[in-house]
Length: 406
Ligand SMILES: *Cc1c(COP(=O)(O)O)cnc(C)c1O
Image 1 (cartoon, rainbow, N blue to C red):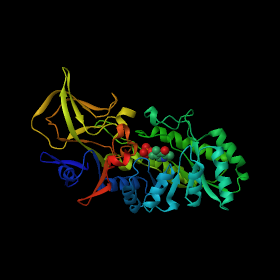
Image 2 (image 1 turned 180 degrees about the vertical axis):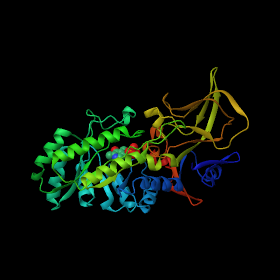
Image 3 (image 1 turned 135 degrees about the horizontal axis):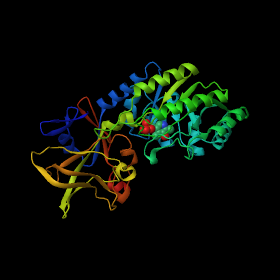
Image 4 (image 1 turned 135 degrees about the vertical axis):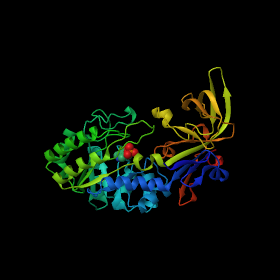
C-alpha cells in the first residue's frame, strides 16, 4: 500500500497528505512513484522469461511526467489519439516502442503516426489499412502494421469495458481477418508485422485470456503468416475491495510462454490499470455535511467531473479520512460530489470516522481512468496531479484556472 496511517494521519509513502494539501487546492490527484515502479517491476517479473515489450496504456493515465517515469523504467506506450502520441513522444518514449491502437483514427492522426515511424499501427478495419497504405505511398514509406482481431471472447467483466465479444466494434472478426491476410499483398506500402487483441479491462480470471490464446493460435495458423509480434493487449484486473478476486498472472504467464514457444514470436503487452490503478489517490475537502431523516450527506469538493468511474461504471472506491478520529459518525453516511446530477455520488457507509466540514478525505485506487476521464462539466477546472517521489512532492500537472475555461 502506498497509503498508510502514521498515528491518526494519512501518508503517501513517507509524505503526509495534510502537508501536501497545505500548498495545493483540493481536489487533487496524488500518485506514489514508488508504487508505480513496484507495479511495473512486478508485471515485468511475472513475464521475464517471455521478455515482452511492455507498452503502458496511456489512456489509463496520460500524465506526461508519469509516462516519462515509466519510460525510464523501460516501458513503451500504447496510445489511442494524436494527443496521447504527442504526450508519449514528449515523455521521450522512442517511436519504436509506441503502438497506436483505436477503432477510428483520423487521417491526420494516421499521417502523424506514419511520419513518426511507430513500432506498429494496429488497424481495426480494411478501410483503415487502405488509408494507411495510401498515405504511406504518398510519403514513399512502408508502414509496419498490426491487425487487431476480435476473438469473440467474453472477458466476464463490466459490460461497459468488455471489448472482445463478437458484436463489439473492436477489431476484425476472424473471417474478415483471414480475407484481409489473403489479400494483403496488394497493399505494397504496408508491412504486416503483428496480430493484436485486447478483450477488455478489469479482467480478474485467467479463463478469458486462455480462451483468447487458443483462438489466436488457430487464427494465426490459418492465416499462414509469420507474425513477428503478437500483441496481447492489457486488461489485467486489480482488487478494488479487500475481498475481491485477484488474477493469477503467474498462471497466465506460463500459458503465454508456451504460446510464444510454439509460434516463435515476440510478445507485446499493454497494461494500464495494473500499473497505475492502486498508485493514485484523490484528495478532497468536505464542503458541507447535512442530515436528513435517514442519513448524513457528506458533500465533497470532488465530484464526477474529477472522477467519473462511480457514475460511469458503478465502480466502488473506498473513501478514508486523512485524519482519523476516535469518535464515529453513527448512522448512514453517503459521500457525494457537488455536481448537479444524482449520479454524482460515491460510496455509502454504515458509520464512519467522525468528520467535520473542511476535513480532508481520500478516495482510493483512482490512478487508472481517474484524471483521464475527468471533464470540465459544470465548468469546473481540472484538478492538479502530484507525484510523490523519494519524499519530494512534484506538481505533475497544475490545476486548471477557472479563467482558462470561462
Ligand atoms: C484500454 C486499453 C488497454 C489497457 O487496458 P487496461 O485494462 O487498463 O490494462 C490496452 N490496450 C488497448 C487496445 C486498450 O484499448
